[in-house]
Length: 116
Length: 111
Image 1 (tube, helix red, strand yellow):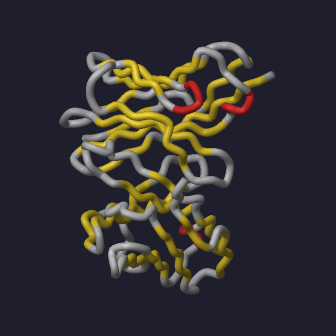
Image 2 (cartoon, helix red, strand yellow):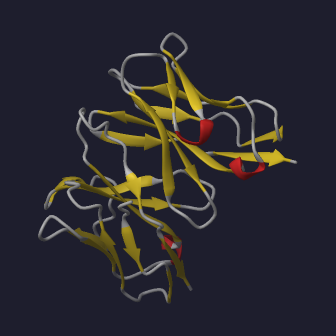
């Protein structure tokens, strides 16, 4: 069964350092999402791509976060500089995002970020 | 404003008993509703969805959910709980191409 891949699974970094996360969606899924999940809470959307275009980044802290999906396939989320409050699970999900296929999202295993 | 509420932080149930995890929503249009399950240090797994049609939706692992438009609810149910069902459950709603997740309900199934 096809899965969403994410790496690394765990990342420890010091504050003010740069960190990057990678996501490879399920083949053929045009829509890709990055979420942040703080322990004990539900996922919060950071950015949504349709192919290579950003369709929603209203909740992305653009002063320190950036995301790209250059060829409309895999994606990278970057934080620079990292802050203590960025410690969280970063989840990537992909979807066919159509009524025909039901809109459900398929999630990767996540990257657990700890900022010290 | 769009929102999803899961009123219970935790639900405890004995193995073999029926379980219900509650979810209510508020959207401006017709809702697309979803349930996901999350095991420790893992991503979310899709369980089931409601888009249109029959109000009782069947999903993975014996779970089902009942859509109630008048009560704006989409409660997750299972007739007989298993210890392995213990996990974190999230309700989500899609409205105008945006997803909103609830805060999650921890389900504890005791042997």
